[in-house]
Length: 382
Image (cartoon, rainbow, N blue to C red):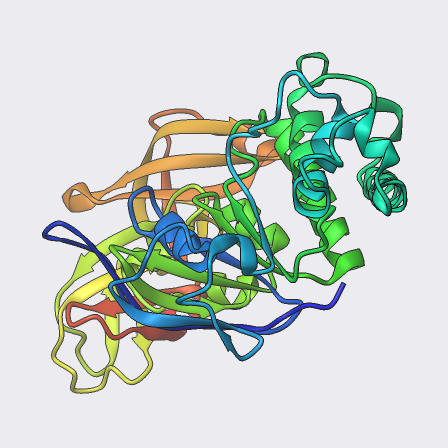
């Protein structure tokens, strides 16, 4: 199926006195998979509904393939919406649930009748076409063996695949997905997102996916658009977004599961002293700005307490997470940090152990209070 590009231009939306979306601009290439990522209430689902035509924007425009959609009814926008709720017809089989959009669009009310419909010219051919499209779609989704079952006889993952099939069978130019995996358990969520990735690769349909789950966004997306408080903060490929968050809100939200933060006074000569280690902050020379030093647990190293340049810390808690473990430590002046280490290394640690903590300055960020970010450049022992 041919895909369309999507242009979102200066979209704004208010509910009463509340600005839900403010000046959202986004370009999505034909065939691209873009995820709208953000916390609950940030406006990402509202933006998706505006694209679908289910909500009207107070300002701005939506275009697909160069065609303005602002005055186009939802049913005529050539897109399909997959909701968090499966919204299947409980009295219909899997086959009939998938076929339902085609039956409603392509058959008249008389042609849908079981006896009279068979006598009307052209109805038989259209019904055969619907059957073939259902067969093709069920094959892609591996639902062939389930076509005669009803939703009550399906697992959560199977129901979600039926919901996807009902959207796919129309061969839309754009897919919109509003947290379609939220109702699944952890293992099934991982499996189903793999299925979505496979289908997107095969179909190459433009897809806008909404989630608050960073792992889903990273696993599925060509690019991720991060929304906070109705504002689009950053758009980037998942790896770039993780490495180069534009501000502290984005860095915090993308932290899995923790972000280390330390309030610091204005850098002197572009450097910060952390314990006995000097961290050089690129472009901070003469800035005179206070701010926050941030780094992820995987960029903190636990060493012996007398390790040169290390910050003295004490272990307060260890969380085991399979192959890794997160070690929580307290430093002087009440600062708390988390380091991610191997499960094997964690077996040798105990609460109360006195250690040293060092920071990989290449992976540390300095967020000045004015919001502009500098990246850690290099480090060395004092």
